[in-house]
Length: 341
Image (cartoon, rainbow, N blue to C red; front, top):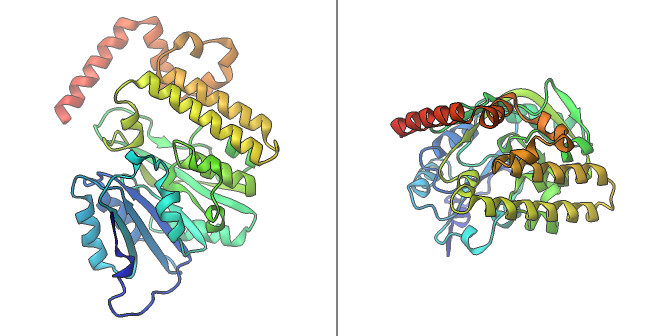
């Protein structure tokens, strides 16, 4: 059972303006972060109406209470669904497609999960302006600042490219850096009918990018207009590290290979070489994550190794060549994280 506030939020009986943009937000145990996300939406300076579609998957903290608080303040703007039973545990791994996309009324969809947030009040206007002026563009995105929840060291930015640029479909498929989910704005027509490779994929952003590649080109704005949080306890990445991590990485790799195969079939092999390379990269990164360094350092995969950040390559080299030093630094870092928590 879920609580759907869409039927009770028009207390005066009037209908809100039809939005140009539908902001889609997923939350689960995001109590420490959800206010940042909501404030980022509300602070946007735009010349068009928009709506905020929030889906909470039965959080066990006070996330639903905070969402209700904002809904009471902005009943004509915020449209929440608050689940009372967790749907992810029942096999619905892409809740955007199941619960948010079917409610979209806008011409465009903007993505942001509840533990990330927007920092630039002109972000939405800039992206919509570009999409309105360039009908062949299927996806507009930008860079993001990285914030670690535990204060540990990390790369400063999630920055897939240097400089504003058009991105070809092949580059969207076979990319060396991920795109921040909270940066993505695309045409709502993209998600009117979801292909099987979206529904079956273990993550939601990759198949969206594949769908965008199949229907047009991308445009990247080289500005950090959002924050990407790393290490939130409720995040998909954190959940994946619990339990048998190696088995989860194998399962993830197999699921992603299936996604790429289905996409390749759905697009008639138009992007076959890019798809094949993207699948190999996914497999390679699971080897990085599970520290299979004999494979990682093999000449056969030198291209993908060179795509890793300098920070990652440094720590791999240290762990391989100076394991005692790597172990010492890891223990120091762990003590610092324990003190912060």
